[in-house]
Length: 608
Image (tube, rainbow, N blue to C red; front, side, top):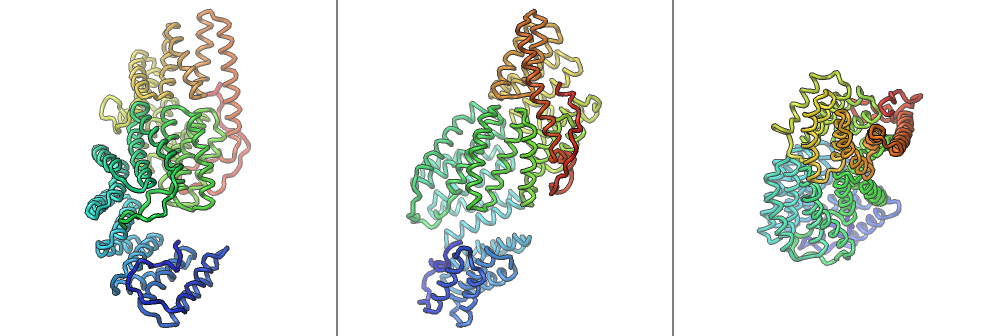
């Protein structure tokens, strides 16, 4: 919050302030910035201003200062609202009093949103936008604020329209920097809306604007980070990896290194419309870590994903000591969601379960965070249930997640995993065929994601294998291999190779089986994927025995024994945790307290 002594300083033609006013304002600021803050005394000093029957300008500014202090430092929202409404009303009657007028409107609309009075916030912001066209900074800021409000309401069409208006206004007032901010923000919403056809030309235009803009080096680099984050996210959403994403990701990492070496420039831009920052440098650094984790996770470089997650979480812990910005909790939840998936693949189920519980705790603290991540949380619980062979609970978790999501990619991911549950259960044919019809990779696949389509081919291959239709299974799995090799989707490649190896083994083609299983094992060790390693080592043991390679067969048997023991111990540890009871939660907010249970209740047969 800014210094009370500076509040409204940009307004011109203000009367020379009385000494009593400056004294009271000085005392108020002293109490506000004390450690700990003495807000009650600060408020008393500001209220004392009204005893002197001050001029309207001082009266309006004092109402704004009181409203702001009460809003930011107390729970007395009604009194804060009363002062802000008075500041807004009085300031509209005064000429050249823009800062007080528009700051009052901005904070008042925030307060309305906090009180779930969105229908009061919208007309207030619209009026402020209408009368602020001669004040570029406030006009742009209020447009951003109303666009954000529409975004939170999931009215992305209205938000995009406002950002388009802002981009055109910024162009007219000669601010290419803020024009780029508006356009990049619009691009972000178009990505959320899945309007990929509109995203590409908009990003092309933004790239040109960003490269041509000459100004504050930190602002320029922050624009490049925003642009590159959108580009990488666009490619990742399309399920693409090495060929498309790596150059952008490398540029992004170079950008953040450049920003970290630049000194913050205290010189204000000459154009008031340029007075914006996208994100603080420290937040951008965490965001780049997060995007790197997403890329590593999709590509199957899980050790790299874990390394960058650890770095990002350490940075977040430091930031959260000084900064209570909600975006930091969002970053933390997304990082945890990715690392949980890594842990499940690498055979660390107990740790994954504790991290799922950590996500639950973060969501308990913020209803908005839970609303945005409930479907992902139930999906993670479903994946955990599969890993501990609790298929009924997995089905319940995935069904809950499907009910909660409107995101098409997440929906497709959940359906793919639910189909794998039905295949393993072996007696859910009607439900299974209903799902497979909706994720048919050969016909009307619901999303453009390369990765999800490759996974859909794998699921078809898995079903055909269990049904003994081996030629059909090979066709599907070769399609998966072709797609996963094209974009370095290592985990899908490893899974497809080991399943093909299993098919060739069943068909008695041991040489061909060996040609599939050996690279599957090598890739699974590189990821590392514990389940594929377990599967591959079992096949290698039988293959080498059939080929008469007794030493290799013994070595593979020893590997299989080691993997089995590790997975078994982890299984027992996970199922013994009180957090294991989360698998029964399918409705409402996350449970506050998780009761302990006596021990594992799930079958270990699938691990042996």
